[in-house]
Image (cartoon, rainbow over all chains, first blue to last red; front, side, top):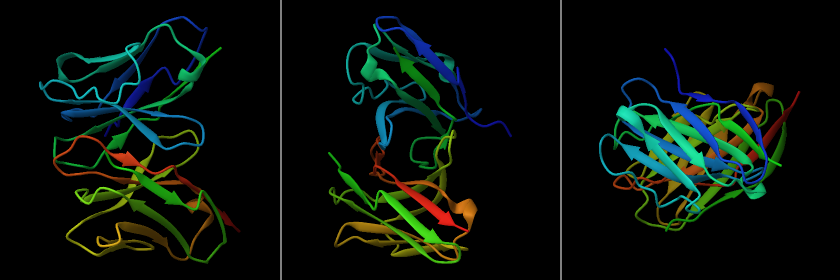
Length: 114
Length: 112
C-alpha cells in the first residue's frame, strides 16, 4: 500500500523567504510527527498531532516554525523568514494511533536556505 | 527530558562478521526502544524494537538486548552483508509520552 509521502523532495530558498513542506500520512493513521535531521545528526522532534487533540508543539525551535493538520490527514510545516541554520532534512512520520509506537517515515524534504 | 547517546558513530566490518551498536538512555521511565535503518536519500525504517519487559529480542540476523538496570540497549547484526550498509539510529520513548528521543546515528559500512 501507499506509504508516507512528502513534497517537495528538495527545496532551495533564499534567506528570509517562507517555505511550506507537505506530508501525506498513511491513510487511517491518526498520529503524525515532524522531525528535523541536520547533517550527521539524529532526529530532532518538532511537533506531534494525534487525531483531533491539541498538537504537542514542544519541539518547535522558534515561533518561525508552525504546523497544521487539516481534516486529520495532510499536514503542512511552515517555516517563516527562513535562516541558513534551518537547512536540514525535514521528516514526517505517521503511526496508526497513540500508543502504537511503530512509526512509518516519509522520504523527507531536503531544505537548503541560501 | 531524555538523553540518548549512541556509539560508535562509524563502524566498518568485513562481510560475514558481526556488528554491534550501543545506546544508553537517561530516563528510567523510558520503556520502548526501537532501532531504525536509514539508507541514503530515504527516511528511517523500523527494523526491530524492544519493550522494557523483555531483555532480548531476535529477528533472523538482527537482535536487540536491553539492560534496564544499566539503562543501555544494543543492536546486534550477525553475518553482515553489503546491503546492511546504512545509518542506524536508536531511540527511546515512554509509552505514555509523545516524543521519541533519537541517538545521533551509526554509519555502518560492510566491506565485501
